[in-house]
Amino acid sequence: MLTLVENHSLPRTAAFFDLDKTVIAKSSTLTFGKSFYQGGLINRRDALRTAYTQFVYLVGGADHDQTERMRAYLSALCRGWNVQQVKEIVAETIHELIDPIIYDEAASLIEEHHLAGRDVVIVSTSGSEVVEPIGELIGADRVVATRMVVEDGRYTGEVEYYAYGPTKAEAVRELAESEGYDLSRCYAYSDSITDIPMLEAVGHPHAVNPDRALRREAMAREWPILTFQRPVRLKQRLPAFSMPQRPALAAAVAVGAAAATAGLVWYASRRRARFDAV
Image (cartoon, rainbow, N blue to C red; front, side):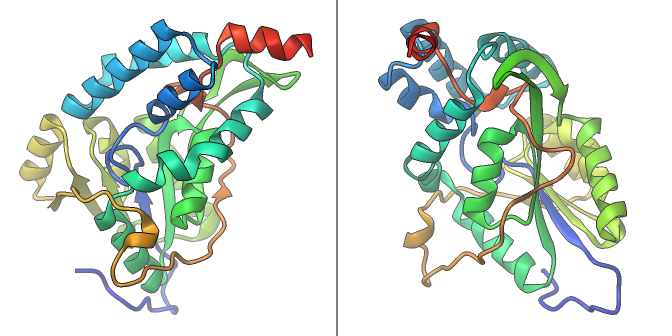
């Protein structure tokens, strides 16, 4: 049960949310695969691989080895993509693709934390070109995400900051220091065993739709286990739901494209060649 009113004489607090399968029902990056294929941005082979990867992720999640393989593949795939084009595509399709897969339970929880006076921070391995707009859509105060090296407006394929595993916990601690959060009174939510370090960093860890390994760990540690299963468009939530107008402020560690999810978006060489020819 959340404390509805924050005691402002005490240090500030925050709620840290993983994104994929915690706030939204799918992989944030892979969700864009079909629309980019339809727009001629990726070839059929990559589109099929994206769909298959999404299916595997939805059925069983992604352990460390699977995440690393996906990171390597997507990092190589995004090499040479124009960053501005990526941002524009995400902006054009985010409401169509992401709004319908936001968990009703997660949206309610975010609202409760805001009403209690807590900041809401999205901490995701996906890239910032995807995570930041989603953070703004759901009313997050800050975003921590993976970023990639950019030169001359294009991704080089190199990873500059990888928001994964222990690095997420480091980002949480850095934000706590800079923002004055009392981590012993903060909350964290995730579905993956790879986020154990982030969950351990706060006083109120929660497993959400946990994979098998995290479920075992949560049960052993007596952490609350939550089940989110009702994706719904924000405007369709009842009672009428109005997300607080809070800008998604990118944390210093969180501005960039994605590595593990590579950014977040899919650019085919065909489209790139057409763009360069303009």
